[in-house]
Amino acid sequence: MKRGIVVIPLLALALVACADDKLKKVAESLKITAESIGVVQSTVIEANKQKLVSDDDTRKILQVCIKVNQAGQEATAITRGLAKLNSTDRQSILKILSPVLLSVSRAIDNDLAGIKNDDTKQKVKVLLLTIQSSLNAAQIALAAS
Amino acid sequence: MGGAIAVVELLNAAAPGIASLIVMIRHKDSSLSVLQVLDEADAKFSANLKEATDWLAAHKGQ
Image 1 (cartoon, each protein chain N blue to C red):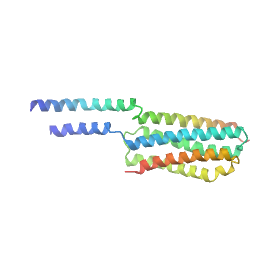
Image 2: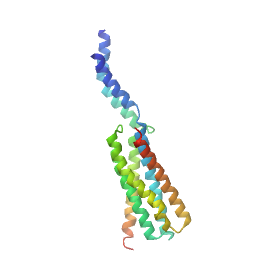
Image 3: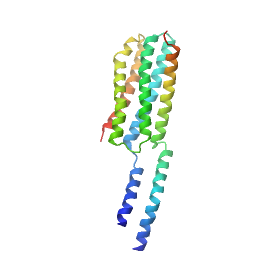
Image 4: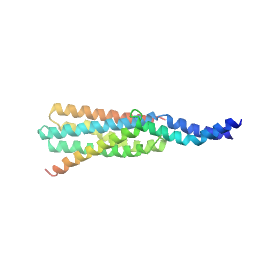
């Protein structure tokens, strides 16, 4: 009986001490996404000031950025409350991130076509691809059992 | 035997406190702190949102 009593707290200790690598991966992916989307916005807004990108194209790209930022905040809020990821938490975060990944893919395929300046287009494309990769990394960490 | 039981009881009493301490150390250590990374991500998402909505508001209907 006494042995059983001590095993429970020791198990709890072991769980706390063991960093959840998947949770960390998700957090780091969200941070990379946040930083990259910030650079996308600054690049597009600056290019718009220099008349290299039209207002309409800037608006389209910023609207995609807003979606990514909002989803990022939601995913961050859910992840913040967790010590370890269980399957319900995983599904909640995946539900938020999956449509955002689609929006980013669509932006890469369609919205960038309107940018006439090749240098700006290339910069934004590389950044959107970085965002796609970091969100994919978060999805893979979440999907892994 | 009595000594072993005393050690077991001591461990039981100390375990929650030690667990809290480990959590605190993890949160203080930047290499391990998930919360710190999330705080930074959240602050950046908020700043991005402000930048984007400010631009959209300034260029509304133009």
